[in-house]
Image (cartoon, rainbow, N blue to C red; front, side, top):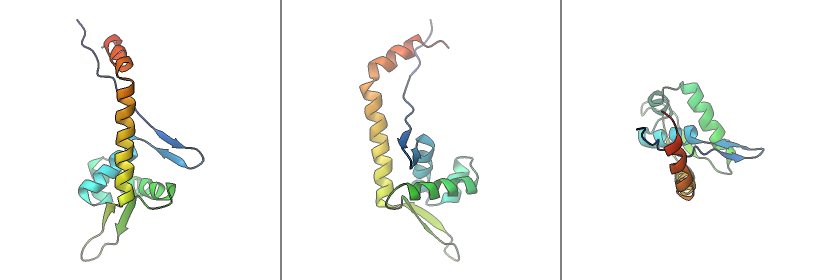
Length: 117
């Protein structure tokens, strides 16, 4: 007897002509919030610092206000944190995914039951 697969949606938010936000960028934001550092977040995700920095820069340019606040190094070392808007963005994305999964629960369950392993 095969066991049902727990099917879930992978949501990518597209802002036409502006950019996209998906699970990868949201996970990067979660890691920055947790670790207070772009470089630590990049290491935790097995991503280069340059790639993480470019994604943060892209996210900061997507909206009319920044998503991540950064400060320079020195004696106190550098760091980063989500802005209030950044926190709202992560929460909104999580709500969007949860609502989409909830609205499609029956279909996802049926597809999960029919998936072969």
